[in-house]
Picture 1: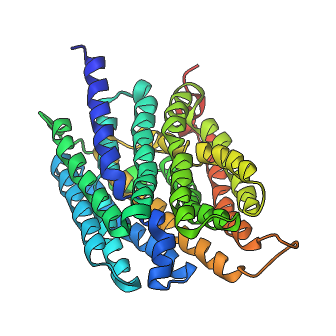
Picture 2: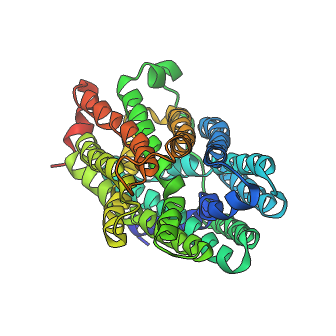
Length: 417
């Protein structure tokens, strides 16, 4: 088997494994309308549970990504995946109010912190720079597909068998994905440590281009997690307003949200390839300006025509995650290999902190503006809530503009003509 074919088979195996592991990623969002009623939660409390998941991810992601420079990624990845599956299973069996849900969802986030970034580092190790954008795009696309399935699978199962059974099925999926990952690591030998004379401070803290990529990524995470976390509840509220019964609205909303999130499976692969050709900074800037425009518009459509809302939602779902692999690829090209894990840990810390705060700010906006009607019959709460995520997205193109002006980033700006 040729090296290129071998690399392709390896990448597809890793992606399939991650699709199953991702079933616990935003499954809470799919069952949120049920839990809000059952646990008598406010929108702000619901947002806090979103955020504590991110807090758990940050706590482990920063530590484990950094340790991946020194420890075998095999054991980090497998242990973390098992942890997330077990924690989600405990949520299914024992979460019965806001506080227990808060704790167990946070524990699930801790497990997820050891799979995404270490997996990304595996891809960066295997593919040279000229093919890396496409490879990372495919990898992130698989994660997006897993994220969309983490909405639709529990949403559909919860509608017929209850939310606890839905969460149990998600955990079984994680365990299957973990077993599949053993094929990825068959014969794996971590590369020897490659220290840099610049050290941690020089490679990361004083590396202005890398910091601009990290801050741009944080802007992307603010928008994406605010949107993703509340997309299914948005459609549940919209469908209820259009006359659907509550249970049917919840199941259908999870399917719609999953389909829109799942569009990123294709957009990330395409955008990653485009960034190989046209440059990282230009690609990111165009995509993020488009997604910000969608954020400013989308929430105001809740009481309008269903087909119009879906049409804008399709564009929104395509753009919201498209630039994610470009940020990750750019970081691998700006930091020495021996400190890439630490750089990814920093990216996780800054990015997922924004992803942790954004859903809570979104929920606060829903509560604060719930009775505001700028025009008769217009629900202002959802419009303002989505604007909060769009405002954060505007920082991304600013970071890319600054990055293009830095001589050290010329490779990222030019691409392959």
